[in-house]
Amino acid sequence: MKIRFLGAAQQVTGSCYALEVGGLNILVDCGLYQERSFLGRNWDPFPIPPDKIDFLLLTHAHLDHCGLIPRLVRQGFSGRILTTPATADLLSIVLMDSARIQEEDAAFKKKRHQKEGRRGPHEEIPLYTVEDVQRALPLVEEVGYEAPAALNDRVSVTFRDAGHILGSSMLEVRVRENGEERILVFSGDIGQWDKPIVRDPSVFKRADYIIMETTYGDRNHEDMKDVEKLLCNIIDRAIEAGGNVVIPTFAIERAQELMFHFGRLRREKCFPPVLIFLDSPMAVNVTEVFERHPECLDEETLKLFREGNKPFEFPGLKFIRRIDESKAINAIKGSCVIMAGSGMCTGGRVKQHLLRNISRPESTILFVGFQARETLGRQILEGNRRVRILGQELPVMARIEKILGFSAHADRKALFRWLDALESPPRTLFLTHGEKEVPLKLGAEISRDRGWNVEVPEYLQEFELG
Image 1: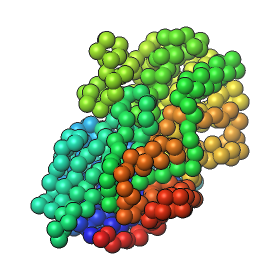
Image 2: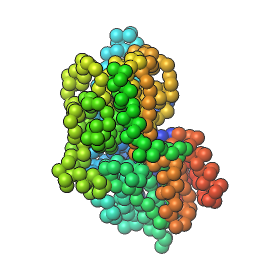
Image 3: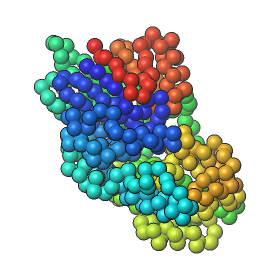
Image 4: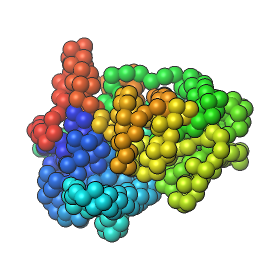
């Protein structure tokens, strides 16, 4: 048995792991790189022959886990893609949206570069197209939670709820060779406990090898009791100043969680009446998917549906689909709240809203999710005084805020809670999906305090599994 780390190795995005087990070539996730210095990897030939891959096991529908699937198919992959029903529903929305953005961004850059008299990288062609997505989607097969799926007579996989976003999963891969069984657990992205909408993360009693994410392995989030108070204070301050609140928003889970909290705050009259826009066609479509998958929802959210209360609707909320509706937001007098994608400001409509608000001292840019290193969101959050948005250099004069309690990722305390469920140590714990210093520090601590064998893989590093 072998495992090779093709992404999310000492960095956050581009999740992708290759397994050679039981006579099969298996890929776990196939994610898009979003950090600036790693963007070139999106364009590179895939590190292993795509036509030799038998299965792609997909943990969830965030772009850093699924966003390179259409390109993999373009390069020759024709195997089976297994994932949960909710993820399959979301995947078509996410990849279609991504393809359209790839096509639009390529056309925009080409036009801008021609105007500037220069030629950009990759000749301004899209990374992949809507046609590539249409070729990929028929390969998807749905597998329910807790239902072992046999990949051949020696290998099976069980999808378990990760509690991260709708349909997210952890993978339990069982391999039988030479009369012995080995269990490999891929954590995917681990969610938080006791959060609204989705269920809590699954835990495991036994695993021989664990591949665990470490996004927030160096910090703890705010208490959820404080999140709504912080949200109210930020909106109140912006209204008082006469500015807008722009929230770069991930279309899956973060948008819905924000609407859940905004609805409760509006019912409790915690801030003055203000228009709240969800300016993301994808987020609007995703919100409709939630109602089709009650198997993924927690008891609090199911109770709201049973009582006839829609958790994602409230007075003052406006869903924006068309581009002319998005542009019309700029004509509004007074303050408003604008949730728009993408969550790391790497594309989508949020760039237009940043363009119009980032140099306004009365406006606020509120970050409610992880910002990968070198993304526009990270540059703003780290205090850059000037940033480049849609070809323009702009001074950052807006108020910059963050609330990490909204994160769909487990924090340091929750990661240890997840590991503590194990009744015995794994043969090896692989730490991935974290900025280099985070898994290295966390791994050293676990190795020192627990005596576990811990590895922090480098990009393309391969390990033999006994």
